[in-house]
Length: 196
Ligand code: URA
Image (cartoon, rainbow, N blue to C red; front, side, top):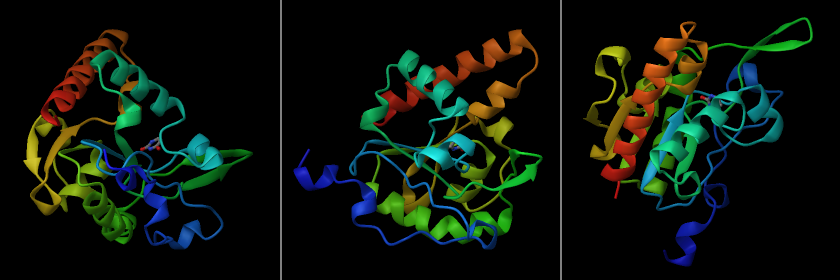
């Protein structure tokens, strides 16, 4: 890969937008090489990501890492980012409780995400969950029905829709959790092959 393609994206990108609720926090930007063949898009940074300033390094990220390893996909060769670049939460006592971004939040950050897609220019995008799907496809879609399928997304780039790792973490039934996790690993393995 030519040297300039491995620069971190932050080096060349403008600052992301800031939602009204995010004035007191820092953005968590995407991470990975420009020119990565595979780009993963999540929802928004969580508590741990916000504290560490890196995407997918909390519980959902650890599950994603495990699934990627089982799927034979090297995370360091991929670009990993989020649809919304700030952690949205409400305080419950001393705890910061995750709040899902709404349609307005997704719309606000979308132009920045689309610019990121253009800069990375991946062969395949993977939408992890409903927010990423809405941000990449420009509309709300029935993810659980369409999961595992590839659609034409921004700049005619293919987008594989799959679930968010937090969805797997939240499944209460251990058997279902195992089946759904195995399906997720299969989808990641497919993505790894399809992006080559
Ligand atoms: N969930 C996300 O969608 N992104 C992260 O970076 C972490 C958790």
